[in-house]
Length: 93
Image (cartoon, one colour):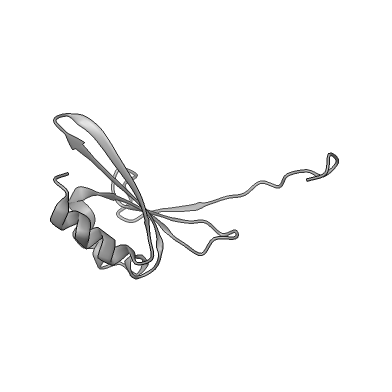
């Protein structure tokens, strides 16, 4: 970037699936990336698997608590649905 050029702002679009920011959230990143972001409480993985976004590549965040402590797992995959099914079978939280 040249010294005289200005950086342009970027935006992401967040969608609170159930109207609750503490629930499942999807995010669209409309520049130079074709993936999709899902933020999914463990209690809503079943709902997430049924969503169109789960049948695509993307980044996902699993949030939850273990013994009163917040936990976050960040993942990236070619098929979100299959990866989330693996998490359900193999992860405790």
